[in-house]
Every structure is written in C-alpha cells, then in structure tokens.
Amino acid sequence: MSEPSLPGGVRLASAQGRWVLLTAVLGSGMAMLDSTVVNVALPRIGADLNADLAVLQWTVTAYMLTLASLILLGGALGDRYGRRRIFVTGVVWFAVASLLCGLAPTSGVLIAARALQGAGGALLTPGSLALIQAVFHPDDRARAVGAWSGLGGVAAAVGPFVGGWLVDGPGWRWVFLLNVPLAAVCVPVALRHVPETRERGAAGRRGFDVPGAVLGALALAGVTYALIAAPDRGASAWVIVPALAGVLLGVVFVRVERRRPDPMLPPAIFAVRQFTAINAVTVCVYAAFGGFFFLSVLQLQVVAGYSALAAGTALLPTTVLMLLLSARSGELGARIGPRIPLTVGPVLCAAGMLLMMRVGPAASYPADVLPALLVLGAGMVTLVAPLTSTVLASVDVDRAGLASGINNAAARAAGLIAVAALPLLAGMGPDAYRSADEFAATFRRAMPLCAGVLLAGALIAWLTVRSDVLHGTEAQPQEPCHAECTYHCGVSAPPLDPGEAPHTAGGDGR
Image 1 (cartoon, rainbow, N blue to C red):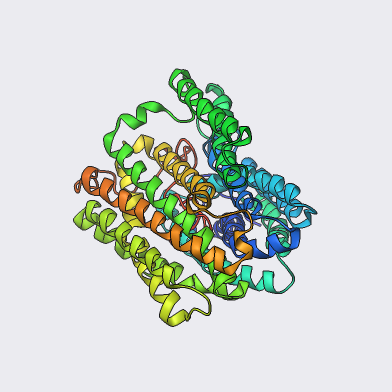
Image 2: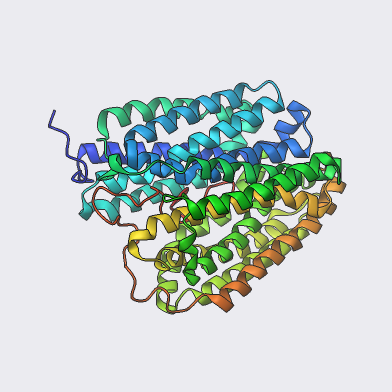
C-alpha cells in the first residue's frame, strides 16, 4: 500500500481521493436524506404518537433550531481542532441522535432527539465540504466539489422516494434508523483514508463565541415556542413570556456580538450594503420555501389522499429541474447580472405556490399538482444559483466563507420561523391536519402568505441588488483564502437543506 498523500495534495483520480470523496458524500448524504424524508413522514408520526400539529412543527423546527444556531460554531471547531475529527464526531453524534429518534416512545423524546440531531448536523454539515477544500490538490478542488455536488444532488432527488417507501413499508422510524448503517460505513472510511487538517495558527487564536451561540439559540427557541404555542394557548403567559424572552435575548445577542473581539456573527459585515440586501432576499425566499414544503406534503397526504410514497415522489420535478438547469442559470446570472434573476425567480415561485391552491381532494397530478411544481421549479432554477453567487461576490474573498456561513444560517433560521409562524397566521388549529376539509381551508390561506413573502423578496432584490455586483470579483468563490483555511466557518455556497428548502445539485450546505 502506497503512502497516503499529504493534506492539500490528494489527487481526485487516486484511490485515496475517491475514498475522501466517498466520505464527504456519505456524511452530507446522511443529513440530506434525513431532512428530505422527515416531512414525508409527518402524518404517520402524528398518527402513531397521537400528536397534534404543534408536535409535527417541533419535529421539524427542533432540528432546524440547533442546526441554524450552531452551524457557524461547528465550522470554527473544525478549523481549530481538526476537520476530520469534528466531521467524524458529527457523523457519530448524528447517528446516535437518529437512533434515539427511531426508538422514541413519545413525542417529547422524538423532539429532544431531533434537537440533538441538529447539533450533530452543525458539526457534520460544514465539515463535509471542508474536507474536500482542505484535502484535495488545488487543481482538483473544482472537479471534486462538482462531483460532490452531483452525487449530493442524486441523494436529494431520491430522498423523497426513499422516505415515502420507508414510511409506507417498514414504517416512519426507519426514516431515522437508516442513518445508523450509513454512519457505520462513513466513520471507518474517514478514519482510515482522510488526512487530518486544521487552519494555520488556529492554536493561538482566541476562544470560541460560545455565549453568542447560546444566546442565539435561546432567542430563536423563545420566539419559536411562542409561535407554535399561540394557536392552542392564545395570548396567555405561556406565549407572551417566551416571546418577550426571545426578543430580549435577541437584543442581548446583538450587544454581545458587537462587543466581543471574536464574534460568531460580526456586525461589521452588515455594513456592506449588498451583503445586507442579499441576506434580506434570502430570508424572504427561504421563509416561503420552508413554509411551503412543510405544508405541501401534508396537503398532498391529508387532503389529496396521496400515500407517503406518492407525496414524496410528487415533489421530484422541482429537484430534477434544479439538477438539470442550475449550472445554466448560474451562467445566465453571471452574464446579465443577478438583479433580474433575483426579481423574476421569486415571482415565478410565488405563482407556483398560488397554483398549488388548486390541489384538493382527489387532485389530478398532471392537471393540478405538476403545473404548480414546474412553475415553482422554474423559479427556483432562476434564483438559487445567482443568489449564492451574489452572497459570495458581495464581500472580499477573505470573508467569503464567513459570508456564506451567515447566509446559510439566515436561510435556516428563516425556514424555522416560517414553519413555526405560518400555521398560526393561517389559523390552523392543533388538530387541523386530522381533518381534510379544515386543513384544505387553512392551506388555501397559507399559500398567499408564502407568495406575499416571495414578492417582498423580489421587490427588495429589484430595489437593492446591483446588476454589476458579480463583475470584478473572484471567479472561484469556493477557493479558500489559503491552502490550510477552508473559510473561516467551514461552510460554503448555497444555504440549502433538503426538506427545509429546495436544493441545487449541490445539496446541503453548498
């Protein structure tokens, strides 16, 4: 057996290079599959655990809460203590939490295990791409990222099908248990074939922004709890107190970040107007996506009478369009500038969501569901690649990783708040998903809200995003600022997670 290549010098065509790529794909694939299939399983989870709508919301948001709050910290841990070490820790953590989800006897245990899953995902998600960036030779990085993205896209595409098959077959618990054998393959391969890397000078750097991470998580948790509890408890102390606490903790979080020498979320970066503008667009777009994908799978199963497998498969056209056309959309955005795509894309997505209002009992897939998803997919194709490029182009190259990580967290937080708030705004009661008529009525109220948020994003893009923002910037935003530094946060490219938001071929965290 030949000597293993040094970090930063592994060639993609080598045996070790293929093992490294397999490790990264398996790791990110775990998170992608899990996120994609959970939404499909929600009705069965509710029926099996005798849970109301709030439990279904928490099944999604508990994961998103810890992931959004800790993902920047997870990337920094990899830079400091070793990317392979933190990646493997994340895989093991994620698998153990998945096992707890699969064995959960009650809804409370399931929600707690989902929160633990999100924490594992915060270690795993940035580490997947960080391994590729730090291990492969610079000449092979682009091809390695492309291969990783393509294989990740396949995982995103088959996720709904696999999830539906598992839910209709062995049961919803296997949606989570599937991660255990994947981790059992990924961990030994990583330990044997992936060299350890860390950022130069990391040992002498200041401490981590743990207070910022904790405050951010608690602020999001308070607001999320209040939004989910409000339909059942009304304007009671159970709602008002956590809402006020969440807002207060959010204010404290901002003050702490302004004063720390090493903030997780440096306020100074928001002085860049284009970066602030594109994050405002991101929040609008991914809030709408988060709410839509949470409710649409329930609509197809509860109202239209689809099986879990049929509901998961029904959403495939959006993913297929993204896989086929995202690269061309990126080229178009580079040629004409991002302003028009970021304006037209959300408008198309809004139209697709409004078309979903036609889906009712015994809906015809070719006549009712497919046209809406094709229009939605066209909008996603139009906006996602230019959105990613604009995020990275809006700041200096040495802050590209930080910018991408912030944008990633913003997208996840937006989806989190949307899943918590949309049922409240649409008037969904705790047992709405048990009644086809009641859920259909509230779904028809929710879709215009999602469309309205998208139109707000389109307006922000038209008024604030410059057409020339991509010109004169680095042409390779996925290259680190030096060979041993995979960005400052270890997260790069679009803020996507299957099941929480739509996907490019890059899948999660790209």
